[in-house]
Length: 370
View 1 (cartoon, helix red, strand yellow):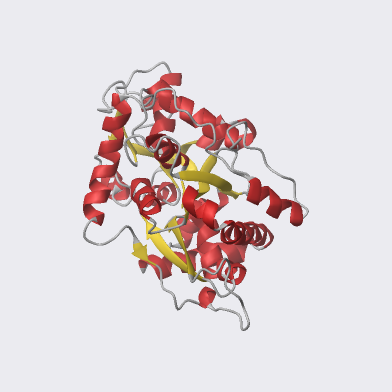
View 2 (tube, helix red, strand yellow):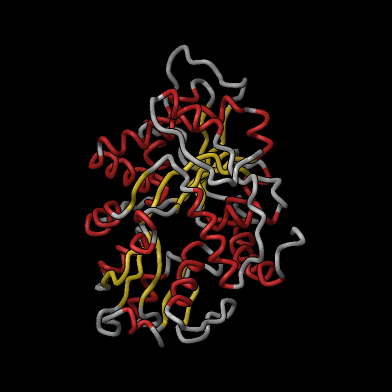
């Protein structure tokens, strides 16, 4: 832990990391995606990149990681890596993916902004780099319409967020503060009760009445709507241009240094996937759902999948300025103190890929490697 990180941050990170890591101790860092899917075929005559037998890629089984889901399902990663086998692990929580990145269990991963910030600051800037963007949006405040009819009605209610200090938790705490209300960030107690609840069980908690709503990413938000909740606020409405980072691409610094050609190949595949998603939105939505089913054994129903998909924008731009803003929101909430984010980005390879495709390059907002 660097000296500039507060004791509050240490406690928050311990809470955030402890349960996932205990559960993972016996079963590895994440579930292994199948290697015999249609997207895993290696073209005849293909060559290995950087002499590597494989590149290990991590992602979450949710729609805000759909670039990864579609890239796996449609074979974009394997095609770009040639005879170097793309291996995949599926995660449920940021801390477990950070641990996998640190240990070398994965090389590259799709990850939310708060875990990326925490992972970078905890290692004193030595373990990861953000090398690209993936998605914006897809986060909503959804509520029980019988109990909450306006934003002011949120005061005094019980609202779920996924995890202490996670991206949505920080955003909700910041929104609460902007209303002039008070909440203790650690306990979640105050003018609003912030109830940290795993996304998997949030629909059950809503159904039972133990929470009155939730500030959550997709598809959890649309799952709640299918249970009778309504969208009270889309977080994108709070950001300039309605864009904010929800998913980044990160890499371990040692892998980036040792195998830049492999990293470039994954970034090329990601950019090609995003381009394909934009050109084929219906087919992309179907492909993402097929990969969710392959990974978890269960596809999303149309009444959840369709509205969730519409609220997410896929982008190569990491929207670096919004990451800096999100870090300041964590500072304001008392979960982070003066984070040193200089050097968290290295967009050199991404901009090389974008130039080659005739696309505009993207900015690191002054937070890139010097």
